[in-house]
Length: 554
Image 1 (spheres, rainbow, N blue to C red):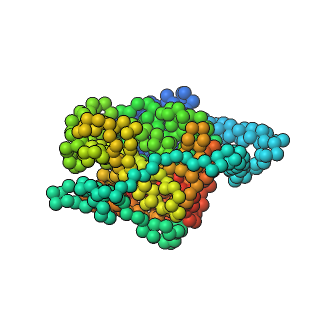
Image 2 (cartoon, helix red, strand yellow; image 1 turned 60 degrees about the horizontal axis):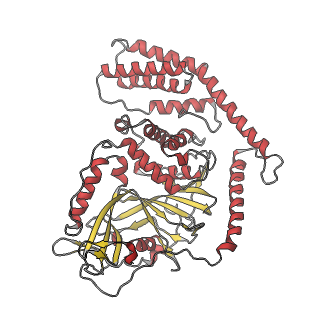
């Protein structure tokens, strides 16, 4: 499938402009003129092969790219066959514009019209489906069908669930102070320079529960990004991508630096990275209002993970994790390196030494823009309640899933972090065998942040399951434009303040619903995207927030 596949009808001029935009947004590398000429000849040959194979849009793209290189590099017309090469490309471009490319475009438009007519025919005679005559009505119809199904399922389950409560691990609380721990408000540094993690996490400030509006301080003109076509239950994909575009990770793909690594990737991950780059660049175009087609990107995701190959409803958090891993795999220049296992003593070694060794082992095999922006370490500690000795590990993560506290009244994001980092007791069933006591023992376990990433994804665990019963927690979770992670940190990291840049929302239940995105853009402040429709953001919906995207303050 070509990147320039149409899922939304547009004019022929807009279609050509899209291809031209991607062909000319290119910065040639600093190499010799001879090397540029070799590249241009390869592009010419590729364009000719694609034209013979009926891939007229890709042929048009490569002819344009060839002319762009010859123009930007400034190769003299007298240098070898540069003028002949440029004339060949210009003649081919003109021929495609007036012939094969135009026919290719008209064929795609006819297929789009046929699909739309098919939807209209299927909806005739069904009183639950309204015949649509425009894109907005079609969008609203799709939402209404989802919500109707969701309400019916919810009503049927409400009677079965009744007062059932989903069990969860009880939080361990103790009145005994062990010397290792510190009950101060923040992590402190002992006299020997060792960071002492907090045993208890401080309560959130009252300001954490305040309501606010998105664009209260933005005074500029609203010039929003484009929407994205819903291909059929792909709102999860659209919302995650709209959020990612507002991050440093999205900005990275506006340049061509990624091509240095993607060229050595496998075919599947290479297609994923290239198609994601195409979407990012299309969403950053301000000269077009038509929604962006995600078809090539979705197909590439389906090749990487079969779960996303169809058109069923999917979880946005799972999609985000698979996408980050896929981009990392496509750009990881250390994928073939064999890591040397660490032999560090998890009890005797210091936190700093253990964390360093775990990080070095991880980065032996992992190096990409995803690691640079998103990877961080969590400190997992297990303390034997008999001998008080502590074993620690420092795992690397690309995001964090925080639970919602039960029965605590108002809830803020800091409360969720507080529960995530709170110490809990595991009984003998935990099967932890203490290396010092030489037997199974009761232990105390705690998770804390050890290092902080540039880009932090926080998912609120709204979905729970117990056997055949699944449910969604609709408790409002308050969050602010800034968050300080210092109370949940057990290292000497200095900058702990993060700024909010994106929110993925979910409305509905476990059996059906709809994803939307609220995101920050320097061009227009905060906007809300619901597939094809983009509007100015008003205020957060604390009952719908599912994924929060924070960027570390400069």
